[in-house]
Amino acid sequence: MLAVTAHDLVPPGPVAVLANPTAGRGRHEGLLPQLLERLGAAGRPVELLRARTPEEAEAACHAAVADGAGALVAVGGDGTVHRALQAVAGTTVPFGPVPAGTGNDFAVDTGFPADPLAAVEVIADALRAGRARPVDLARLTSPGGGERWYGAVLAAGFDAIVNERANRMRWPRGPRRYDLAILVELARLRPRRYRLRLDGAEHEVDAVLVAVGNTASYGGGMRICPDADPHDGLLDVVVGGRFDRPTLMRVKPRIYQGTHVTHPLVRSYRARTVELDAEGITTYADGERAFDLPVRVSAVPAAVRLLR
Image (cartoon, rainbow, N blue to C red):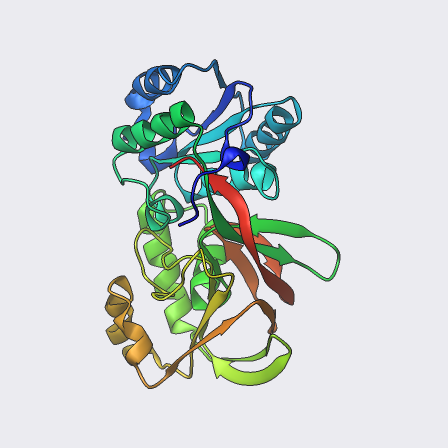
């Protein structure tokens, strides 16, 4: 970990807070006043950003940074963090994720406590000390010029297909919709031909799953890229090959421990840049819908400074 220097001092300005009251199905909603109070105890003005949709949330974060916020804090899950990262990536404005969602993979994998109150104490202490620690992000670009930053994992296989299916469904509500989407897509499971270019080296593989990780986990603790390190300037690429349905269902529970990478149908790579293409895939970054393939992913060292 890099030592704290004068360069790491938190800029002046208020602490902007993006909070998602529906994160984690609302189970932490009542904590927000306590979280804001503890942030305020760090001695800075605290401004709660107003937003009704994810798009408004992202715009509010950009506006706060442009208006001189000294720090940005996101209270929610990986989706909320993803929106906030678009505003702070590549800037000197430090960032604090408070894990309060269903999936909190970026916060936990970068060293924050899983408990929201404990995490906000870490952030407040960093604000008081003027401390910020750099970590890498991944920059996702499309041929049309679109760009997104992500902190955890890009899904570009069966997992992304399930997300896309679940997002199109209007019934049932809640987690059962995702479970039903898994069943539907398992019935349609087939390997696809992927074209990978890893730091210029080309690979063609038949696979049902491809993940590109800046950190290890996605989906609320599934260690899909178990060796990914957000401080090494590299991306971890995990490819699940020609799995049939029974084998995939047997291997899936092993993802939580990260032991799936020892299966003979799984291959792991590491690269600074990843170019990825296959037909009919819409990618998901940090669980959020991103671009259709093809895409390019680049590791960007020290792209964000975390308040910890």
